[in-house]
Length: 190
Image (cartoon, rainbow, N blue to C red; front, side):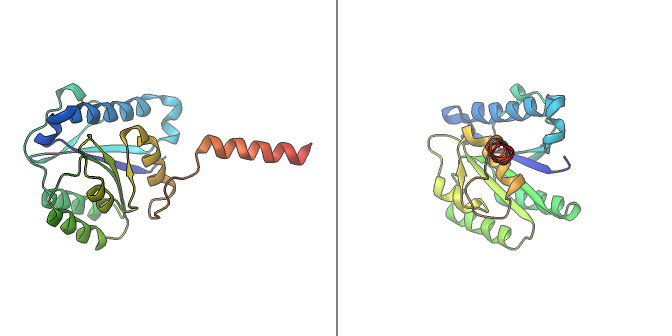
């Protein structure tokens, strides 16, 4: 599949609190596992990861050692926007999942919303990291207004693949679609 999805992982200092960095590492491990299975590769998007802390660093999902990831500094939106603008200059669309607690100033969130609203072809999903995550701000960062829990990472990915620019909550699950199709075809032949 030629679909490309960016994971933007907030690794600022606040991720050291309440094991938030552990959650981010586990989500990235999940993506590594999904990407490693040869039989799933044709169904998987190409993932790229940006670590967002005191700077923005592209991190190799295939070879990166998750345990060496450290949380430091402060994540600011202007450097992230600059990096995303560079990606948009090369690619005509941008789909990404923001892994963060959403604990930013209201002014920062509003400025990011303005940046996002001025861009065409940008689809963002947010994953709430930590018990103290600010879901209202996270919903404002997302293009569909939905905040996913870490357990719903697959649903966030499906949402970006199948319904990136709409505000519907979740696409219908693939296994459910296949089961319903099988039931309909059995009903017609029997």
